[in-house]
Amino acid sequence: MIVETPRGRFGVHFAGDAAPGVLALHPLALSGAVWNGAGDGATARLGLMGLDARGHGDSSWDGKPFTVEDMADDAAAVIEATAPGPVGVIGLSMGGSTALVLAARRPDLVSRIVIADGSACYGPDRVGQWAERARSAEFKPREQQLEFQRDRWFGPAFREARPETVARICDIFLSTSGAAHAAACHALGGLDATGQLGKITAPALVVVGSEDYATPPAMARTIAAGIPGAELMVLEGARHMSLIEQPSAWARIEAHLGG
Image: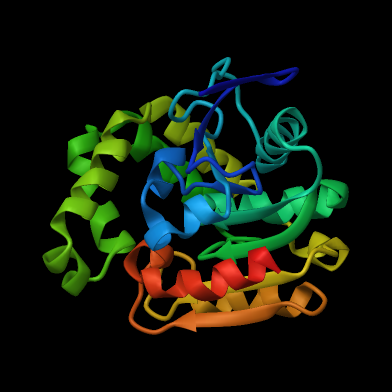
């Protein structure tokens, strides 16, 4: 459905009939539809609402540059428009970075948080590296970008065992605007939320795939060390889409968010 807010119109994917309880933020160049069917029913039990980031899925975008802070403020506006009080937040990849900033800026809206395969900062060369990725995202045909993406998202065993899931994620990627993808790349290049981690008061679970080379375990350890009381869970053998690749992780996630 479309949620109208003072910050624009946002696509939100509701899982099940439960009252909204968890806001889910998706990876780069995908949409809230990535969460459909995740966790063997956990998303429905949690009352998950998958938000489309600006320019992604069904969400509006004025075509101007934006930051991770802008996406965090968008998420805050959607929470205020849909939920009666603070909610759990789960973020994967770009969504994890957005969730960190949201929890630091608006602790009144976040009751608990899960950060999966995310980063607080992509390092000293991040601006140039993400600018290069932005050029590829905008000007290279999207079909030609898929091989790079699939290899980062999923290990070979999962790609062979679950081709239908891989194809579904690829279809979402193909439908995403290259211009919005590029703008989000620039946003991630400008991110350094390391100094904000200590401001996060929501109980935090940090998850990472042991074979994630997009946001490797060292980045997850930095996040877990920076958030007071945070727990770290490493999923052995998983790559960047760890929560899709290993649905068994959702038992721990559901316990954390439901707690």
